[in-house]
Amino acid sequence: GIQVEQSPPDLILQEGANSTLRCNFSDSVNNLQWFHQNPWGQLINLFYIPSGTKQNGRLSATTVATERYSLLYISSSQTTDSGVYFCAVSQAGTALIFGKGTTLSVSS
Amino acid sequence: GAVVSQHPSWVICKSGTSVKIECRSLDFQATTMFWYRQFPKQSLMLMATSNEGSKATYEQGVEKDKFLINHASLTLSTLTVTSAHPEDSSFYICSAGGAEAFFGQGTRLTVV
Image 1 (tube, rainbow over the protein chains, first blue to last red):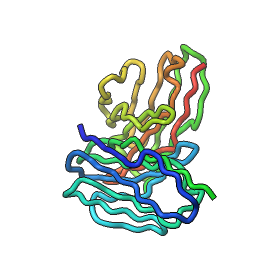
Image 2 (cartoon, chains in turn purple, green):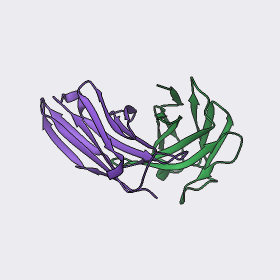
Image 3 (cartoon, rainbow over the protein chains, first blue to last red):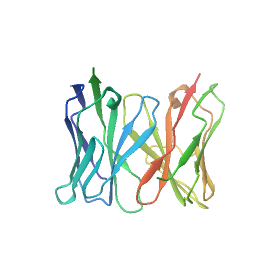
Image 4 (cartoon, rainbow over the protein chains, first blue to last red):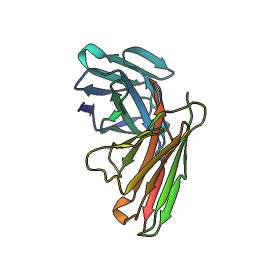
């Protein structure tokens, strides 16, 4: 099956700093999504980005499908950005496969 | 985006009893839904694919007789944990959607 690797596993930032999270995947995919899991466990959809670049406020994401990786950028980080960020991929008609996540801690 | 609702959000049950978790697609029809399980500090692992009107497809290592899945309508899938034991305590979460997947709020199950 498809392998999804995320890096770094843990990230500690001061408020206001920028960060880049990476997701590598082992095969071609039709879907790639980034999620933020809040302390209550809920998965918040950040981006649906099988290819290209998208931006939403302080967050942006880029997927280079031909090279099988995606990047999530967080600018001017805030304490509320803390949590676990997951990358997940799927091929047509199949379930999302998740990476192990990046745990982000932002301190004030 | 599409809305997926899961109920209950948390449940505590006694060892040996059964627990039913519901997953509903509120504003779209879902012929396929997915069930995941997440242990503390770990990622989400796919348990099974729920197919409307037919049998669920289980991932390797998931006991189909313990985790009963019923997808009787285009908006509802249920996961029943039968004869629950403490090792079944976990966070269970469902998803549905088209090209983009959306997730329910999740259910935290504690078996005592």
